[in-house]
Image (tube, rainbow, N blue to C red; front, side, top):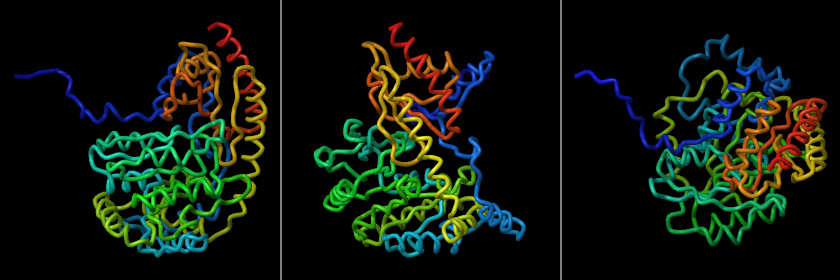
Length: 403
């Protein structure tokens, strides 16, 4: 008998939330009403006028012209893997090319690693606020995110003592995002050492999300594993951010040299085989990026530093709002002193509908809704940012007075 009832989706989809993209549906409604939207929700330097270095573009174009358009090895082309190994080894994380996997951006590397490490019901220590990919992947595989707090009153730093209390027999990994998305914080070496020592002592892998490592305003930050090369650390990065090629989805992970990670590496490679490979021509950009001209990085860092200063000065001048000055990347996490009963999502959606400025509410990153945090992407030119912050100030005054 023919039926027209809706076909259900898997239950895991209900737990898969990615606020950075999900909120765009609301922005489309605002645009449909005739109001232009300024998208400060996603960290894509290209849409704000920054350009991919020409020698990287040429490397990919040459690969295509030379017929490098078929499948490549699942773990990545040898040249790219060797360049990553050479780069990390030179910065204090000794690793061989056979422990490097080329991935479709950092995101795929994170998903491969978590899938290889974590079973349903297991726990993973995740910073709060966090990058929402981690919680989304854990929801998909049926695992549990256990949040450790980073405190804005301490420059968004974690508390190693809290982390030690959170470790249980079910803990399978520790996620560290440094430099941090969404807060723009960087961690001092004493914090980094404490986190590595915790992972080493409890024999749990530390997943080091280091995609913004070259975008600290004071200069590139060494890989976490450089502080303890024999700790169980897996490092992730890509050409997306510092090398201004987010759409190419060319990333990598490097599995630390300790024998404790050998079975994990084998599991990751097995999973990588199942998805065939990441995009082939784009892998030729990895060597071009890591071994070629990096003069764009200093210019990019200087541009970000200027935008960070504008953001910090202007948002801290708004009554009822405060923000910790970011030290890296292109994100800030302001806090609005919300009235009782109000939520961060209510504030952000109100800002969008009243001004067309699209940010992401902090609870989409794991913050408490009543705490009033939201994330700003400050890649727009400083004059445009200044105009945007004028509108944020006006709306915030009206929102707080109305409540």
